Image 1 (cartoon, rainbow, N blue to C red):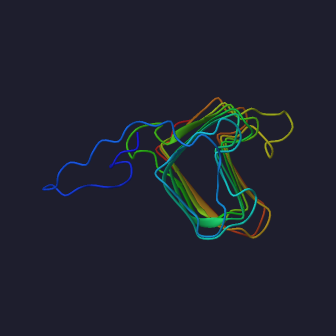
Image 2: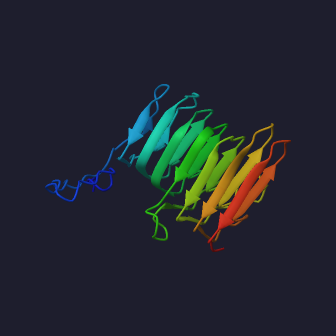
Image 3: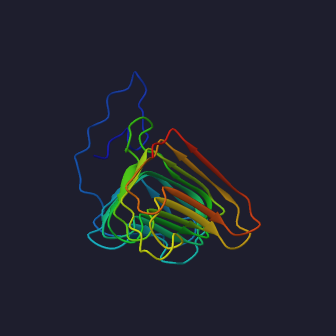
Length: 212
């Protein structure tokens, strides 16, 4: 349900109550950031197939997202390549597909917040055939809170390609940070969190209040 609270509106105490919004099923398709400074706010993206939110492989600058929920089955929840901005998601939930979140060469900030108090409210990424979350050559400050990562499948070839709940790597001088708070990791066949910075760049990784 998209209501005043979910959109960040809080009327003054002396004001009349805002009307209650009716429930909705969300955006029934993929959302593509089509240009620089594009924005996405307060929506639930539920594609019937394919990627939830993407830049279609085209680097976009100045992107903004706030209080966005993404739910996919068989497709990547969020896939960005070379883009940058201030991107905040309430939750990202995926079942199956190669990855739940895939960021390559992304800058700025990328945050999954959850509701700030409830375990799993940031979404569940489960049963991926590669990694649950894949971060490659990112300079972004990435923060993942109140999320579940479960069932990433190992392909019996390499941890570079599959089996990790969250995997971060860099091949150039990429710098950035990864913060995981109140995450739950279970049944990932490779590693829960795998960090492989093969570069001169410094990547700060912080994991707090999480279970493995």
